[in-house]
Amino acid sequence: NEKDFWKKKSRRILLPYLAFSTLVFFPKVLLSQFALRPVELSWQSYFHQLVIDPTENVMITLWFLPALFIMMLLFRLLRIAFHKMKLERYRWILLAALYVCCGAYYGITIEDDLFYSRIALYLPVFILGHEMKTRNRCTVPFKHDYGLAAAGLVVTAMVAFVDNNHSWPYLFFMPIGTAMVIAFASIYERNGWRFLDHLHGAHMSIYLFHWFVQTVVIAIFRKVSSESPALVYIFVFQAFAIVGGIYIPLLLHRAMNGCKKNPLMKCLRIISGL
Image (cartoon, rainbow, N blue to C red; front, side):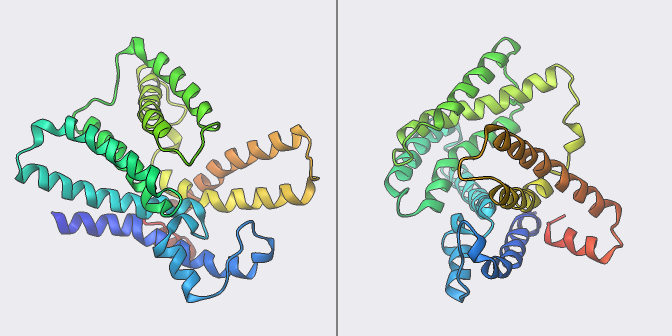
C-alpha cells in the first residue's frame, strides 16, 4: 500500500529529522560562542538549516535523512516512468547514463547547491543498491571479496587528497566504495562472523545520537589540549569518539526498548522514529 509505505517512511525518517533539528537548534543558539558553526536566533536561520540547505543543519549529520527521503521519492517516480514506458530491459544502460548526468550536475552545482548536489551524487548508488538487494546480488564471488575490499580501502584513503571542486573523481570512487561495502558484507557473511550482530536494529539510534557523544568529546578535547596536541591525545580522543559514538547510543537504544513505559524513553522512541 503506497499510502502506508510513505506514512511509515515519514515517521521513520522525517519525524526524527524535524524533532532533532528543532530540539538542538535552541541550545546551539545559546551556546554559539562555543560552537564551531555559530547559529543565530531567527526564523530565517531555523528554516534555512531545516529546509533550504540541510547540509548546514545544526546537527550536521542529519542532512542525509531528507536526502534519503527525496531519493526514495525520485526512485519511485523513476520506476513508475520506466514501467509505463516499458524501459525495464534498458535499466542498466539508463542507470549508467543517470550516473554520468548526476555526476556532471554535482560538478556544476557543488559550490552553490551542496545539498541537492549530494542527492545527485548518491541517487544512482541508491538505485544500484536497491537493484542488487532485490535481485539477491549482495554477494560477490569469494575469490574477489578480499581484492575488492582492499581496493576500496585504498580508494577511500585517496579521497582525502581529492579536490572537492571536481566531480569526475567521485564518478570513479563511488562505485568502488559501494563494491567495498558489499565485499566486506560478503566476507562477514561467508566466514560466519557474528561480532557485529549485537548492533542489529540499532543503526538509526546510533546515527541519531552519536552526534551528541562526539560533540562532547570534541569539546573536552579542545578544552584539555593545546594548539598543537600530542599524537597520543588525538588517538585517544578519536578512539573514544568512535567507540563512544557507537556504544553509548546502543545502550540508549536498549534502554528505549527495555523501558517502553517510562515517559522519557517513550518520548525518545517517538522522536527517534522507533
